[in-house]
Length: 165
Image (tube, rainbow, N blue to C red; front, side):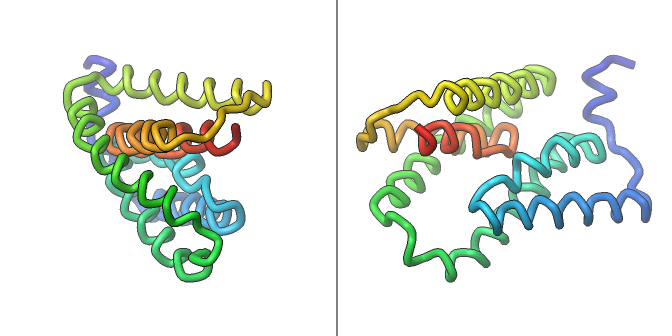
């Protein structure tokens, strides 16, 4: 059995698995509600060990959207509406490209891309690199976030790197 086949095969879901999933989702949702981001960063690495990558992507995206919609009412006054609009539209443009990558690339490559994007985020954060905000950079970070969202279910690194710098 190839490594690729073992990674994508369905795994049985037991009551213990659901308990673990509930715990991971609870911790990730708490992090999201406390910091404004982090649900995918916490949930994806754990859930991908329990479910096939495609299932993990669907679970994470659905729960992340639900949490964001619940939090929208309480954070609405603090949101930069112009930036949010640029991110939404550019992320929507990036979604099809990420979905295509998800279907064309082996899961291992996508996982390596995830690791690389997190490493870049860590370098930017640790070196305190600064980027001047422009509409083009806003759109590029949104586009990359959309592509990463639909390919690996982890939209955080492009936005985290951009907003922290």
